[in-house]
Every structure is written in C-alpha cells, then in structure tokens.
Image (cartoon, rainbow, N blue to C red; front, side, top):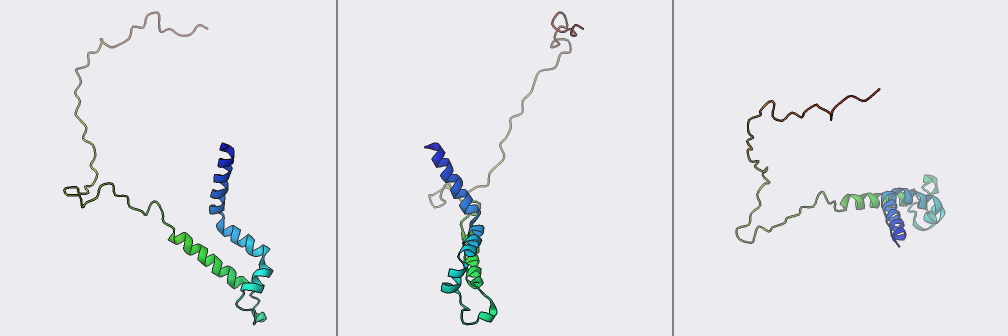
Length: 123
C-alpha cells in the first residue's frame, strides 16, 4: 500500500513539474487534429500556422496559471488577530541570555595524572 501511495505522489510531482513538456508532447502527437478543430488561420494556408496559434494560447494559459498560483511564501499567516482587544503584533525579539560567572581556574587542580593510563603504543 505504501509503495502505491509513493508511486502516486511521485507521478503527481512529475506531472506538475513537466506540465509544459506534456503540452508540447500533446501538441506534437495531436497536431493534425488540433489544426483541423482549433486553428484560427484555416482559411489562410499560406501562413503555415498548422495549429501553432492554438499551441501558443495553451502555453500562455499555462504560464498565467503558474503565475497566479498561490505560493506558500507569499501568504501571510497571522497567529493572533489584532481585533481581540489588547493583542497586537510585535516584532520578534532576540532572546536575552543570562550572564554566567564561573569560579577561578586553579592551574594544577584539573589536570589528569599521566601515570599508567596514558602511554605511547608499543612498537
């Protein structure tokens, strides 16, 4: 079940990522049908439009959809409403760190003895 769900998510991400390329492939595969049904310049064959006008409109629509899509970075998320008496938005402040004082360092008190624990490796 998990693998089917993973494949579905990968397919959706790929469809969203390659939406323009899918339009190009669709146009290449169905160019004759698009020319017959949707071409604006059917009456003027000297222009050699061959459905490119319809393809350009589809690409423009796709571009507008991508530009108008809401982006999570553009949206503002307000956690506390201002209208609820007394709540107001304040800029974030850096946390205040407490000053920590340590005792004086005594030179010989903290050193480890170099006796039998620390020795060079044997040959």
